[in-house]
Length: 352
Image (tube, rainbow, N blue to C red; front, side, top):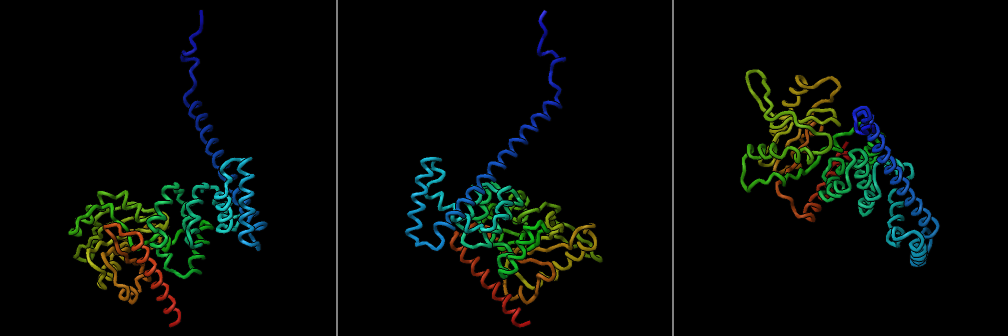
């Protein structure tokens, strides 16, 4: 009598099957990471050899002739991955990321396709910002591309600081130190996904944000989660309401958001300070830092904001845009804002 091979006594234990599947999947993931890192570092080394031995100190036309000849011979042997365009990209990769140790660390999290997206960026600090955010947040190539196209770096508070401070913050970030508000807070916030009409009330804005909370949190930045809407504060015999209360796990802080339809007014400072002090006293938990406030306005008044020294009170004022502007117009606006902010910082240092 033949045995039934599908009988229960011969069935594979469920836990054993599950564990072995997990081992195989983990091994494949590790193999993918290892192959990616090996290839990325190979491209860096090829770029370095060409830069050092062919392009450095040589006539440009002569150097490019050597690169063209090298690419033909490598392509014959190894395929189109080593054509002239690819070799030029490897050289640029080595020049833009000259530190091998940093490159090795990044390549554990970033694929070669990530680096290809970063190479066209002109500013070194901009490239480093996106690379480190990719490493920490494990962005896909598509997400990285979207963040670059939305000019995330130019919209961060960090980009408006002097280069020395940006370098220091990125170095701390690279060293796995805590994220700072400068790396998280933005201006402006682009809320085109809310699909608001030309005329709307503050309640309409708030309702639209709640409907699109997932998108809103993505636009707010890394580490945000929703806590409450119209958070009620009882102070003496008066009631106050915070439009939106969020928490940022990276900053370890509560974040109060006040929504305003018009331009910023100086009186908003006192209102937000009251909210933050109440939250600090009644809601902040052990291990958390002091709460932050974000006043989202349809327009800003830079001189008033500077005179009020809102950053010293933990208050960030930012515009929100309900319609995505033309990219060139947004870029021009952001560059002007960065230049003005840095000039104000220089003037403040000269006066002190």
